[in-house]
Length: 316
Image (cartoon, rainbow, N blue to C red):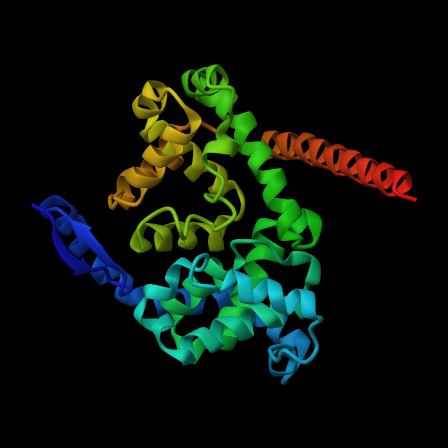
């Protein structure tokens, strides 16, 4: 029998008795997480070092809307609209001060690193605010910057849209190597892991998994970086391998994965699979896979550029 309750971060959810047991086990840890992230961001994520290097007042100067062109303002407004920003029902973002805070972070990041903006960033910034609190808005901004530029996408100067494309290709390559049954069935459906898990990496799982599980993943991301994205992606696909291989259509598969992932409350089981159940992932090997993926993304972007030039030439 499912009952309505809220998780440790204020998200409303439906959970069975077993789900509630798993949630209750995580609440104590969740209460300590904000302080833990503050400590990690100071010592390991590079947030404090970045803030000190930028000087006092840097974030305040960036977080206004005056320095942004209209197209960027429209992008932020769209990403925070009710139909896209899935956290609008969270208590923090039902209040104007919460929406104002996440808007300031996004506007600030657009000016700090214009090439680093991507669809999904609003959810990442919103999640950091939920865990760290409105009083830690500036620290959330710097944690976001350090997470993207130092931990996840250092190879492309934090260009998130580009980095996400690369990491999705890395995941697809690893699925073929480590989950051959899944890869084979996806090929039969004429699709791949990128197509059936479009928002997993772009939102850092914030719109995919329950908040407590996502917070545990962020713990790992802040410490270990982008390899965690691949491990968790593989773990989720491995966890739902039977369901994946039973699916008869990509759209059906996406719905099944989305539905089941939102009810995956057992963080210990997922992370155990991620770090022990998907096999070794040597840094040198992943670097090689990532290099090949980046080359493929570059080639695709160049082809798109050439096609656009051809279209422009034909219209003149």
